[in-house]
Amino acid sequence: MSEFNLLFKALNIVEEDLKAEIIQCGVVQTVPKHSYIVEQDKYIKWLAIVISGKVRVWQENEDRQILLYYVNPIETCVLSLSATFRDCKSVVNAKTVEETTIIKLPVRVVTAWSFKYKSWNKFTTESFIFSYEDLLHSYKNLAFNKIDKRVLDYLHTYAKKNKSLSIPLSHSQLAKEIGTTREVISKILKQFELSGLVNLKIKQIELF
Image (cartoon, rainbow, N blue to C red):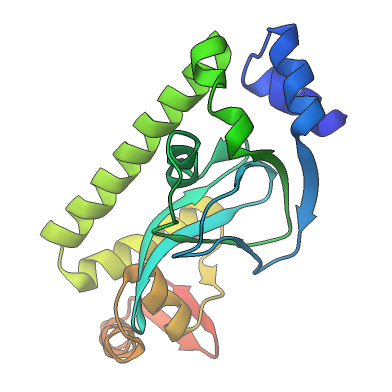
């Protein structure tokens, strides 16, 4: 019940009928690290709201990944949210970055909530807006910034968020975050190291 109360408070859900419906049909689940929440080309049957933890959302084509955004606590994957309005297959993958607790809601039930409940409509609208802004930022980054700048910006952002200059990522992992190949990342990081910007270790990058 504590997960539901946390959700109600965070989303300012005051409608007692909506609370009852969420408790009745919602399923609290703790998902291990690196587990799929949504898989590309599969029908979406559940809407997952993250209560704690983090979920990575990306598109994949052959051996390359394009990071779209992360889903943080009291957020949901907006592309899954779209499935509450029409029956569709997922165009993205979503996987937990760490052990994550979610509330799963069947999409067939959620469909009517945006029309019935003001607080849920607000959550839906804001989710679409925030995700659009994230996608626009990602597009601008891909379109207008050279890849070496994108890599350096990513490393500095990661370090700032985690309050550490030691970044525990392999070249392959960083390539997936940037949306390129491991070979390209290795070449860029080697240039950074020669320029005195980073120190490279096994599965770790240290910023100076």
